[in-house]
Amino acid sequence: MSEFHGSASRGTTPRPDRTPPPATRAKGLRHRLAELRGPDVPAKSLDARALAALAANPGCARRAVLDGAGVDKARLATALGAPSGFGQSQFALTRGNAFETRVKADGGAELLRLVHGRLDPGAEPPAGAAVPDLSAHGPEGRTARTALALREAAQAGGWTLLDHPMLALDVAGSPAFLEPDAVVVHPDGSWSVVEIKSFPMVDGSADPAKVGAAARQAAVYVLALEEVAARLDPAPRVRHRVLLVCPKDFSNLPAASAVDIRRQRAVTARQLARLTRIEELAGALPEGTCFAPDRPAEELTAAVEAVPAAYAPECLSACELAFHCRDRARAAGAVTRLGRPLRAELGGLATVEEVLAAARGESGDPDDPAVAALRRAAALRAEALAAAAEVPACP
Image 1 (cartoon, rainbow, N blue to C red):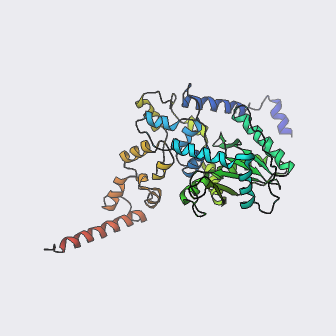
Image 2 (image 1 turned 90 degrees about the vertical axis):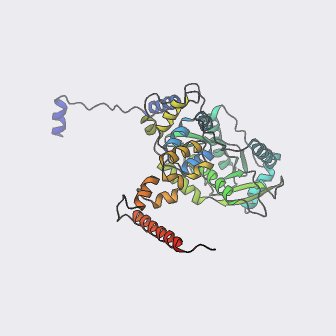
Image 3 (image 1 turned 135 degrees about the vertical axis):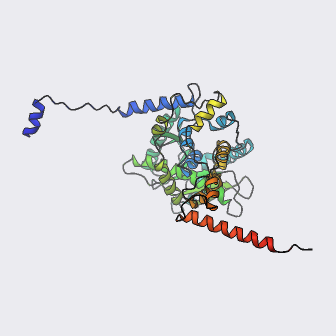
């Protein structure tokens, strides 16, 4: 105590904390992201499909920055001269909207019947379910209105259908607003996510790849719902079995299946947690970097190349910039364009030239398992070619 008083008497004062408050940091981040997007370019909302793709490739800083800043990657790819055909056709969107309208007709009676039969058959039948109005101004207002409706429905008991609610999920320090097809509140107060898709369910089963993609999207919604539930006391249970509704046998009649998304939820949560914070990535970019599509192609190319990418063939079905990144990976001879499994097998060999040099014995550590396997494969290939050359040709 005496030392403390002595130092105070000598006039020593604590240093002021120069760390900006959270509100100031958030305002500065929004301003920085608007500069990256372009001052007159509206932000493109980040949906669950984009989040699922981002979580599947957390090492791609390029996608994290562009999605965090709300950049329209389709317009950016066209401006770069590498347009992508990624996305749904207008016909598929129209058909999907028509099917969703049919499923939710009559206050969602058919949808609630499917939820009751597939997810909660022991509960009372969903007769006279509540369908609250979720309209509000802006995504923040709709998010708050959805949270209020969820809380009221969990306390009231009975069945409640939330049609196109708005949820918020923090992604690398930037909020993403998500809009699931529907969320159902059960009589016990638990919450379920409903995904309505336009691909068919034939004989009770659908395309596994499309079901997997729907499960990953539903996992993002479940994570957002869990954030809402965590703010309530007591916290309602968010079910990890979601309802997938599809057309039955190429008709317009709905069929449903319960999908367990616990594995997808765990993977998505882990991958999103690995994402570098957007403010760190944006702060590392050169001053004046802008991704506005009206900029010259050379300037846009330099801006995009300033952010490192992690291209893989899977990006072709998940990202609008995939064609541009593939061309760059080919030009650099990167082995990532051959697939993530092969890239993992090659260890520190990052380019095709390095792989070929290691196989020929010109470079590489012989004790490296990848280098040893390449040289063994090269020797076997040489033996096979030599043996084939010795075989006489057929007359």
